Image (cartoon, rainbow over all chains, first blue to last red; front, side, top):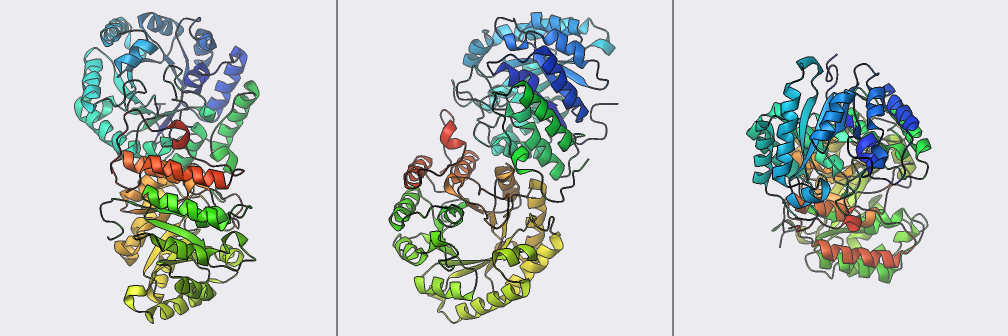
Length: 313
Length: 313
């Protein structure tokens, strides 16, 4: 089954990576597996399960190899991981990830803080990874995404010109990425900007090469930006269960859009996600039990679905 | 100056009515005046300052007459009030309100609970009010809006068919309303529905006769629904400072969209509201001081504007 078969929008759960990396407690490996299993049971088709970074930097994700191996047992699940460099990509390949995402900060200041690399140095890593992936047989070659972070503005640099994003997107593709994503790392995006920038990137590299948005809800515009993304043709949205997450290196920027609210909105709009809302709330319970002291966000879990609500799927 | 001169979107503040009616404490009249003055100083051009209902039902709004008189001293401010019936309209006319809004619950069950009247009985009140208004000279005649509440679904009846809304809208206009508004009293609306229903109402009664949306954020979709409304041509949005408000007669439905977040989103999108965000936060402080025990909502007040943010206006 192809990942988009029978659905209209792919909700890509990033809680086990973006959520867990931004909180102090380390979720036990066994609890991560239970949570991932519950997400899969709810119909989630793609999960970013971890990040291949040195354990001393993100101890929360030190078990990513074991988690990838576990997640791969779910037939049909697209297992994604984040990697900061070629070394991380090597580990991701060894673990058998289906998708490798390398973040590229449009803001070079943020890049230096987050990845401790200049733009030139990150491009070099992209090139090395792309060359390495070309050596793999097609059937076992992971998908390779260049995720442009701080694409809608940076807490350190402020506004980022659209032209800069287009240049980066074009260069990432030229260096061998399979696709490019846009990340609102800082929660700066607004709907007009989302629509404008997505369309510009589509014009630059082709709509098929930029299908995903990673949005935060820092200023409450997360779902409004999803609506703008849908208008511009986006069909993959990252989100985090309970709104866990954020960017520890961008002060003030916190909180991915909430998976529960996103799925509710999409299904209410008649867009099939393949995800069962009730089962998703069961998965939320497994998360709440594993992290009893972490606040979980979202409106739908409190308010419940409307009376007589009929999902699209 | 016409109310829309030099702006792209009218943000109509309903906190002094919808916000204050839904909380237990009664804000002192003097504090209301200070708050309204601060809102006007921030550039707010229309405020729903109260409701002409019997004081034993809503003691929070018993001073509406005095508040209207105060608000009218602000030149250029459009002073709106809610009225449940012809008696309330008479009081609104006497007080000198610029706009009279009569809520009409699409759900008859909700209408009986909220206004204690059947649809036929409310239509009768609309007719009486319209006739009364026609006797006034044009220059002192308030604008008369029929606001269709529970237009996007009801916590008691569930889904409301679009056809029912179109019939109500047509009938309200035929009886003499100047315009019709749609209210998501219950926070049930989704962006696809907003766009579809607004377009259908526009086709039914003319786009110029349905310009305003009243949205709640119960399920977190408030601003996403604004984006959909903008796409459909809506240029007036109700909101409540600090997200105060809701409908006390629709269980589980609480929270107007937050004025601060709405103004931020619109200005970020390049749409001029005429409202200064910093001054709006000053007005929020006057509200917080007057109601120290009430929670105020909103993302923008916590997160602040993006670094280097340039408003449209």
